[in-house]
Image (cartoon, helix red, strand yellow):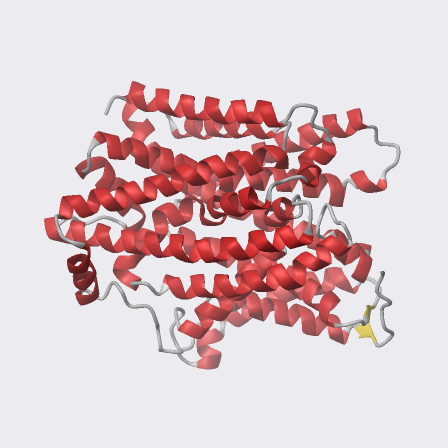
Length: 486
């Protein structure tokens, strides 16, 4: 395929995003950037969240995992589904009750300023690492299958993509992202469906035959019943539920768009409808993975899991399908990065710099500083992508969830303690607990096989980390009850 055509299509795609940004960011101020003035349509937020939740990792890595693991990843998806109901009916009411711009402000109301800043700090750390891992994966795929062939170096690809994202998020923030995520989710799902149909056509089998062949090769296995394995179904379902609670309900990026909806009822409709759609979309990605492996096995091809999808589309399907794949890949990349950089900017401005606490900040000062912070996070993203390129990790999905287990655990424990108890923390204990808990989790994981035999800690690490945080907070707290604000 002509490199000129690919670049032209990508530039046209970006231009479309920039037009949306221009239209949605007129007369935008800091509140527009942070909350979208709480006027976001709930159905657009719900649809756009599909792209944010799935990202390029799902687009590339999840189909590639089907050959070795079957549908066991879908156990996690079932857990995700259950967790969204906790977010909708436990956490969202809390955020709307306090009319929060940053969700970590709740920790200040309930546990004090130290808990508030440590909670925000862990979000900034976790989202920065997680978003850059996702960014690296997609840039690396695009570099390998598109830009390397036309002589564009990796560093330039990374720089141009980040400049594109900065250009359409710098002014409008959340208000812009709600609309651009909707567009990008549409393109991503279109690419998914088109690729499924194209591979089915290449196989020349009907759907029943395809499913039977997947089943015969063990690619439809859903439940893992061996408790000693990391993919044991209870570990996945419970781990998935708590990942949703932590990585969605306690994540400023995901909640920033949800609390930009005008009413709590609409925000809950958004969350519940989104959870059902996500079940279907993830099932399609798993089915796509089975199709890819059947096609590869039929022809005797061998690919690394993360290279399976892009390699087959580029080498063995039509140029038109490859172009649609590239658009879908870009559409999977942008929502997972534009929302992250916007949420990180918001959290740093509100939680660390205290925009809401400083009356001497004029709107002009806020806008100037906010843009500087936004550019600063973009630079951090670029640097971390180069580091991941040097390390060249191939286990991207596991790396993302490993990061989440260690960094979202203290957040989970802090929020659980605040919501489930009325106890008062002792002075200066939050930093100690928030540092000690991940260290204890690391030691537990390191010595797990010598302590528990063949048992391996998997996605339940997040639960263990949160539980340790909760227990330590309970030990170092007083029985005097906190009087909830009305």
